[in-house]
Length: 86
Image (cartoon, rainbow, N blue to C red):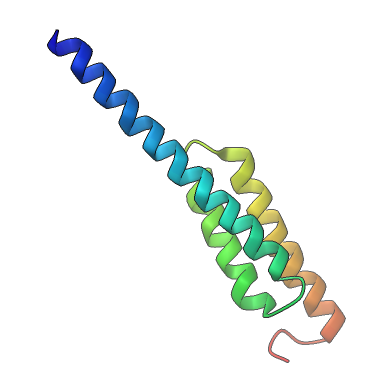
């Protein structure tokens, strides 16, 4: 009986971790999209950091998308404006 309770608790903990990883991944993707339009260094950097956190948890694909959008947002704005701090 104790084994069943322990297994249920472990499953709940894993689900909680998965949910938090998904939230971080989606917030990273939104930050990466915002980086195309406003403050690319700030939001692109946030997207990369949140993407890295997400990659090291269970949601790998979502994390890589956040990283990619953040980096591309920084680079596109850098070439478009000619400077990162403009």
